[in-house]
Length: 364
Image 1: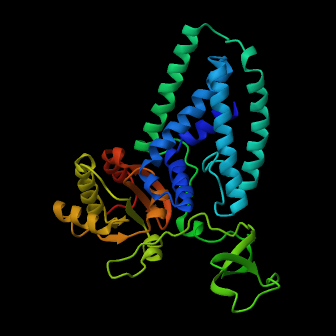
Image 2 (image 1 turned 180 degrees about the vertical axis):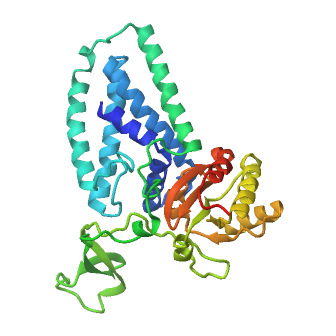
Image 3 (image 1 turned 90 degrees about the horizontal axis):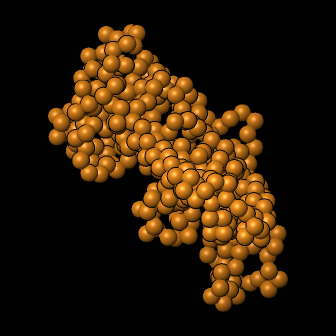
C-alpha cells in the first residue's frame, strides 16, 4: 500500500521526480543522463504502482518480490547517500506533497526493507487472490492508469498542486524566509593536498604534522553539520531585462492584473499553442493587462515573437531551475493580481484563457 501511495503521489507530478534525478546525476557527474530522466521517472512511478498492486493480488509473487527487493535496496542506497553526503536535502520519495528529510526517508526505507525481506522469505507460500486471467486484466488496467495519469498531468499540470506556485499563493510573500526559521549550522572546512591526496579538516582538527612543506592549500568551504529550514518556498525566481536589470519585484508588485508566460527551452512545432497565445495577447492589450514572457532561452522567445509580429511583448530572462518549478507544463501562463496567482494554464488550455479574461472585473 505504501508503494502504491508513493507512486500515486509522484504520478501527480512526474516532472518533480525527473528533476530530483537530475539533481543526483549532477552530484555524481552523470550529466549525459539528464535527457532521459523524464522517461526514467515515468517508468519508475508506473512500476511502483504496478508492483504494489501485483503484491496485493499475489500475482506472480516470486517475480515481484524480487523486483520490490531490488527497488527498495536502490531507494535505501539513494536516501542513505543523501543523508550521509549532505549534498541532497530531500530524496523526493513522496514528491512535493509530502516532503521528508533525508534522515526520515532513510529510516522509512530501512523499515520497508525489513518488511520486504519478510515477503521475500515467504514468497513461495503466497497464493494469488484471483485467477491469472482476472489478475492480468487488473494489472493491465492499472498499467494503463499509471501511464495515463502521468501523461495527463504533463500536458495539463498536476491535478493536486503542491508547489509554492499554487493558485491563491502570493509569489512575493513566498520569496521571503518564513518567520522563526532556523538557519543551517555550518563549519568552515579547509582542503589541502598531502602527497597528491586531498585532505579535509576544520579549524579545530588540524593534523599534528601540519606544515606548509607537507600540505598544499587548495581551498575552503562551508560544510553543513546540521540542516535548518531557513529556506523560502520560492527561490531563484528572477526576471531580467535584456540589459540585465532585475525587474522581478516590479513585475510582481504592479497593481491590477498581469499575465506572465513561463517557458523553458521550446522544442518542435509551437503552432499548437501560438495561435491561442496571439489571441490572448490581443485580449490582454484590449483589457489593459500587462503581458510578459519569462524564458530560460530569451533569444528563442524573442525570435518566436518576431515571427508572430508581437515584438511589443517584453521578453525577460529567467533562471531555468526556477522556471522548471513554475512551469511544470512547457509553457505555462499565469494570471496575477499584484503578485497573487489567480489562475494558471498549461499550453494545452490556452484556448480557454480569453473567455476567462473577459469575465474579470476592472477590464478597460
